[in-house]
Image 1 (tube, rainbow, N blue to C red):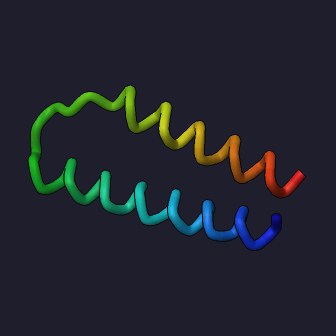
Image 2: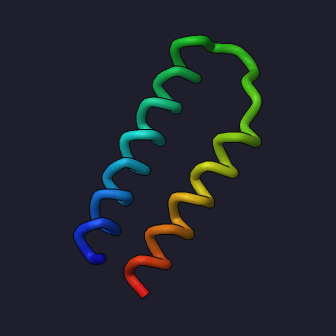
Image 3: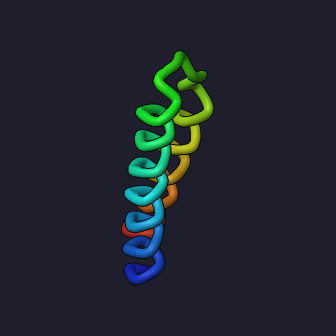
Length: 51
């Protein structure tokens, strides 16, 4: 379970990095709501598996 939480944390970090890179590359207003929802779900899953 802890290994799975670690993998989820790494995936979340990669997702955050890629998303921020895409925002910088586009240089325009993008919808941030799906990003917040997915990041929240990832953090919730990692906390669930750690707990």
